[in-house]
Image (cartoon, rainbow, N blue to C red; front, side, top):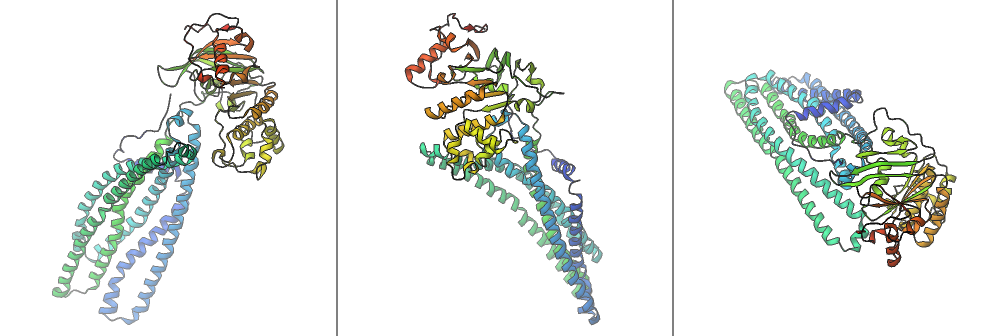
Length: 619
């Protein structure tokens, strides 16, 4: 049932162009005119580069050899115009490509976030959030780099190289042919380095994501780090990851930069050979030097675009790894989508019925087994049981964070698997045991419960959650920033803000996963009183660890190892001193603790009592 983001096999031949075609197909139409401008600028740069090589022939022959003074002004004006045009075109190309790249990164950031929001809870359970954020941040630039490098290399370097080779052939076909002999060994070197860089780049991305993720987790859990004196151990772990990242980065540099001495060696052989042969022809055969100077200029100028094209192939391997890992994420199919033709949920009274539900997170390890019960509309139903009994899983299934293996969950006569998840969840208000606050103010966090809520409704909800007093004592009242995950507030304060968020939602179903666990006795009493009023007319399901919080519940469900073993009111369940519920109650009373988790699992059979027994207990 779980879905995780695992590294895929190594890239296949031709995958660079397959991914590039996909990027162009997805984004080409959006940027077509911007690319026209960038390509035009690149062609101008390429043309002026070729012109600079060609003009050397008339400069040498006409000005220095023929001594044509009348052409000096014309030739100098042409050279000056070409440099001005080249500078403007280079500027235009750089700015246009930067705007395209920045917008492309922003588009993919929004697209990835939208896709992540569609993935099931199981994906995030199996994927560390810090590593996921770091990996996305590091990989997303690969999309931009693939496009920009391709455009720059083809439209600027490729055209420049073709133009310069054309000048070389025009000036001396024989020398041109001999100069191009450096191509085959250069191509072989590029292909060899491509394979090496691809493997190392993936390793580097994965290590860097682990490093950044570990740093993020350490800073988020700094209180635990310091409380358990974990500084040295975490420093050792971070240091090890940092060293591994450094080694991979150095290895990438060593491998990718090997192309530079190889290309310089080959280019040096070509240039020295051409100069030697040209010198022989000029000195012995008496040929005018203009064509030779033009040829040598073109050859030297051609070296840079040829080297950039070769390095582009190696650099594209790194961009390909990043882009491919982004698409691995985007291509994950949500495993828990809405059923075809799913209708909008129409929930009024909010009756909840679990009908013979079985569920497991992993195969052959069921968490819930043939569970059946009904939470009556407008009533309070409490779920109690030892740790691991399936209480929180039950709430997760009701919100369709997961789908049942068998059986059904029905709300107001509607099977929730046949309605849209959004419409279902809009009818549910949820308070978790571990409250989570988002970046923004206290008011913002309460308003997340219902975005259309007015300030007056937000303040009323806070008052009902016993939060208004401490909020008004904050430096900016309701407009006080809460810090990362509400770090500026105490645990009890965060919980009361979370409760206010649920209250302002005004949903017919209220889910409380031990909502008062982080509160002191006085605050708990105030919140319980407020919740009593909020629960009126709503179907409320309460997960309880402290049995004192569910004494007044209309109905109590007792779970053990995923099965319903007892149900009834507090009085009915306590009437049997041998019941599981009564045993839990006694253990808590003796220990003075509020956690059912501290109770030992009940091993002895449970006798019959006035409480209704679950038919499936011995199943």
